[in-house]
Length: 122
Length: 122
DNA sequence: ATGATGATGAGAATATACTATCATTCATGT
DNA sequence: ACATGAATGATAGTATATTCTCATCATCAT
Image (cartoon, rainbow over all chains, first blue to last red; front, side):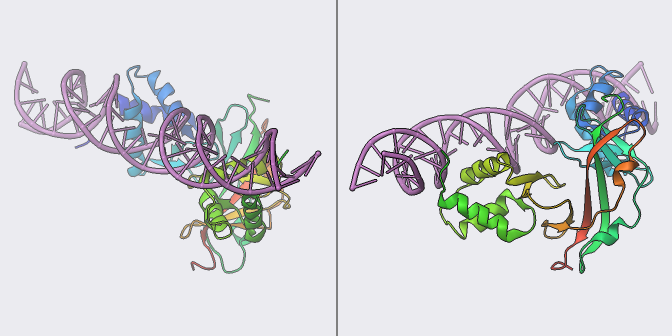
């Protein structure tokens, strides 16, 4: 059965403290602040396991690499800072976006990404 | 100075006929229908040149690989078919989306992506 | 027509993201 | 405390996208 390791606990804590989508490197750095020996392979393994369990979900934004965020969050979108490349949550959503599709197209989801400079980079 | 080659003409024609963002492979396939000898390196080179000239612009949607589209089109968004992976233009845009950002964040652009099945795949 | 040189095409090389391997560590049930 | 085997970490391997190299081709000013 699955074991409760310091590494996996660290990775979970990183996400619980983040409040925004994280890249593999962000998880690695922040995880190493808790468990210094943490390696990339373990980060990859656990991102996959936690995603498989439905605890994390994948977020694909421009700029390479997948990002991950807690899966239990209500519908929301993202802001991507062009300066620091960090992603942030946007909790409001324009209504009826899915009605914008051309006729004959079946929409089953949508993603809205805002670009600019975050509060820290302004 | 720059030369007007059959390959570059073919690639330009592919975009003028497409009316939607194309992946490298879509450009290659359609380009080879015009100039059979067309190779990947040439496609890459010309995508970069045409983008640098401002004739094409890059579109980054989920699912790997960059896509390219004519740069002179008015503001619009995209629909990505989960079945055939083709991208289509969505010409309507929800207003005031950029006002959704958190306080202190400077928004300078946005992208809206609708997911589902296109008319041909339905 | 022709020569200079920009462009091409095939394949090698590189960059990057991710996965597999495996000896070692350590969480867990007893 | 101990045995079991799941998890880890270092690194090798794989996959994929893109760029580089270079011999050859072909455009265009003359």
